[in-house]
Image (cartoon, rainbow, N blue to C red; front, top):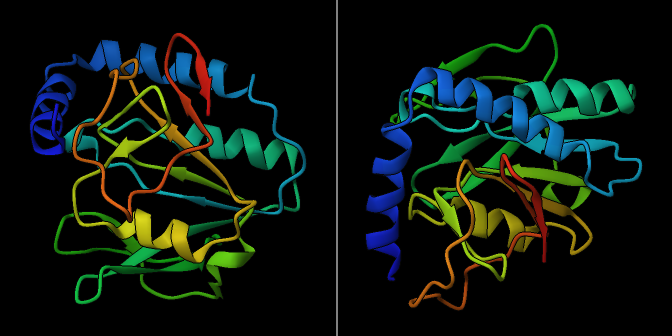
Length: 189
């Protein structure tokens, strides 16, 4: 299948999930995430889920990562829709959030972290394939972020569904995940 068809199909599949299914899947994602072979991390990047699009919720996973690594810093992105880049802001108890043009909550202020300093990134996606390629929403924000990051940064996707066999129209700038966590298991690439 091609990206546009996959986006449409998996967006519809997610929207068809009930609140009860999502709650169960989020709990199972946490269980599978805890099985990942991750050592000490100091800076964690995460997205903030769009609940109206029924995105997997990484926030309980972030709490668990902070419990395991009390000194770890969590950063959230703020996008630039002109050049499709992101800046990464440290989250604190005082961080204020504003919704951007897509309805995504973003930090409005805070200390910046360079992409090269981030150890682990939880990356949103609509679907992924058996080789670790991901399908996002199509703007390339995360592909650019990954390209700017350290090659040692651990890239983890969260999906309610298993992988598709392949994506027919991958581009030169598409970046792979290291792991993808589903309710049934985690995939290592």
